[in-house]
Image (tube, rainbow, N blue to C red; front, side, top):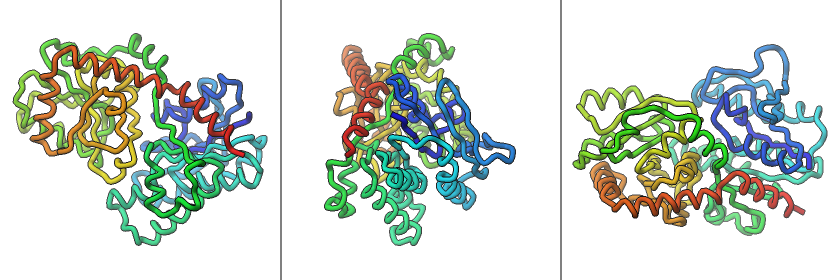
Length: 408
């Protein structure tokens, strides 16, 4: 088959760490299919634009994957220029896509819903199979995070577009396992049957993970200290992540063996690092950013890998946190600061969580984890690694092919 992956942010991972579309592309090609990835030229969360001349689009092959970048404006943050950028990519898609051989199947990703809708529209027009891949519930996320109210005109318009996508796509794939609960809550179940809705979570390339673990080691005295119980967090350190709670929890921890190690970057790292120094804390360290290839070395040497969200409504539908699958591949126990619906660590018995995300109860739960017998920690870790096999991208890609095959 000739398959198009349309994803606004799907530039090569060397520019932006979104591995899902690239890993789908590589595995689909390994299965004998032809794949093209369409993405915006603007690289999210950076000042990089992959088209700096007057071209409207350009092609590039990176690690064997064929990318087509569509010229879109630069932007910073989430202001009007980003909104324009999102709309620009969608309306320019048809004009660029007409230069390529028509596909047998289109997988169009939301967010943003605009380009997802355009992918569905083109697929319907050309009579090819269309999959709407929903990686985030817009506009529900906007409402949940308090960015806009449910009666905001933009939210109402996005809700209508969202429903149109679900109705008109040949199949709808959610990264959240409980997303059909959301469809029922919206009252759309009579128009969007469960039979066309599928779940394919995020995942991990286990072969690459194991290779990176062996070949890209981080030398760090805290990771190598046998006398500490190492609680590791990797990921963004932005205000939206609410990592201040880890600093507060560190203050409340009484077990001197526990040390919280944080790898990542974001707009709150400097402030939190300053707090650690000013408050004289020695049991939490902000390590800074590392290249993704070093993450397996880090999480594989943790005693406990930490999943953390700000408490939001959306987690009731399940979780698709990318780092979770790195944690599982590491073969180490997992601990979550919130309790979601459709819990993966509960399903595989590979970790624990807490119903009370306040600092003192969180500190107490971490102390309980550190006090578990070594054989119990090993058992949880072994379960995590075994569970990761279900989320290897070879498995996930076959699931995607099965979805495409079931579209009439």
